[in-house]
Length: 278
View 1 (tube, one colour):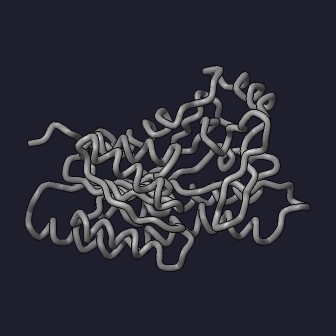
View 2 (view 1 turned 90 degrees about the vertical axis):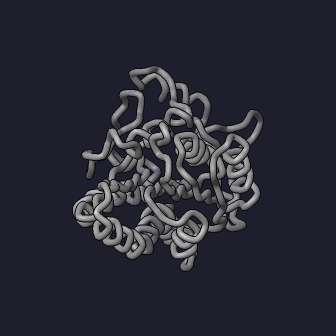
């Protein structure tokens, strides 16, 4: 019997080509899970998968936007066809597109709610027939209880609001409702559903390179990201641990909700913010 806590588990991790998502994928794989890696950019997704396999893990890629109408089915089908099952779902993909309310467009509002709230809903909806069928088969066989895991990613912007982020804050607040509802719906399948709300984590969405504005490409659209270094330093000073978190530390909080030790924890929102709660 393997000593790895996630041996024989299959995990979906959206937005796992870079940053926190990549660290989550690497962490789950190091614990024995077979991981379906996703990113908008196929090249970075394949690099994450290659790094997993180079370290003795198992991974495959399902590239593309989580907001595409057919993505959820492709994502779930990849787990089943490549690894034969589905046990862990991490809804991590997302980005920010900020503005104050009077300047925010309908497209900004819709696009951010689509990626952060509608996409996880679609993924969970697509996963339900697979999970329910697997549970029926496992119970009919009389084997041991199998606890599956869902971890949805939120933010302290969703728990406490954040000026200039009405779209993102609303979407992330919605993730809490999604999490608590799914914990009640899927408890009968022995699925725990929890949420991790991140505080300040140093990623490409918060870092501003020296001498220029930071932008990311989302479906051909250039989105400004990054936080003014002076504001970043001021924010860090308000955090009890006096620093931003690392992507690896963020991934660790998700990992805690995926391992067997958390099998009776469900419907919870865990803030990973160094003591800052919004």
